[in-house]
Length: 392
Image 1 (cartoon, rainbow, N blue to C red):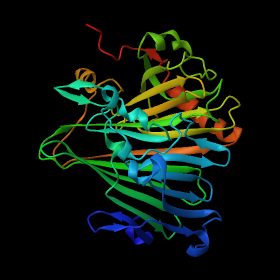
Image 2 (image 1 turned 120 degrees about the horizontal axis):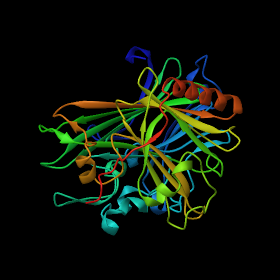
Image 3 (image 1 turned 60 degrees about the vertical axis):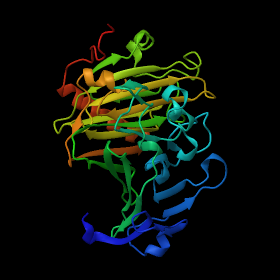
């Protein structure tokens, strides 16, 4: 709701006012609100020791779903859970890694992989995707936004017990790009759904190319042999010959170790929508009694990357379901393909994604049925279409 509904605002970080709160918590008993369930809580702490030293961590629970956010990592969402259902994966990079310890240009621009773990890693803003040189500059893997600490962080609690975790991250360099991300994660009491609402503003006096890719990663317990991705899809393009080999079952997952060590499959998908222009996706386990669904506006995020990393568990068994403004190739390729949007000087773009956790067959069946009925109205089969420019 509007600001009139605010019960409490707690500023945890403000570089403009030199405010920093190392530890803070709030639980349902202290709130004294009627509809707030037991287990409702918010906690802010600073991690200590090793590579995680200095990471700010905010954990919020609405009584049903628990979300852990790292403001130090561009407001990235490290984990989400609801009972046995968890979003995230087991990365060989076991520690949470402070950006201080990451040089994004390491390994010819693959430095991002030295800290890669957790559920939602935003990629962008000035660029994202595979590393490579564009106009004399090295574009490192997936951009900078996930390795920039937030300048402003606050928690808002409404009179109905809704939690909003807000943060502002600046990606700016002198004479270059000047982007600002305002991120808001919203949890209503007891709901299985939470929302991400991001606003990106170009504060530069010049128009700038930009990208946003929501690199959301899933491993066990949802991911397993027989796990499945359902959704409203228009067409799909295998990224390379490896992915093409397995095209007929791109929506089905194999057991850990299906690909040789380090192998992966990437599918570039153009979604279709319901009659309100929204994309619907559902990832569920083999028994279809555990999963996650997502809904977002196709106008905001027109492309979907499905990254299947069916490697051994110790190497990282994971899939990325990644809505974005474009696909993961380097910016030079995306520009040629017409998938690199421009944000005009002083303009903003908003991205809203809604995620729901499911822990019963009934919950999964309801979402799957909804997707089926949308797909019946769009009877076109999933077409294989060329997405990447032909190699010259």
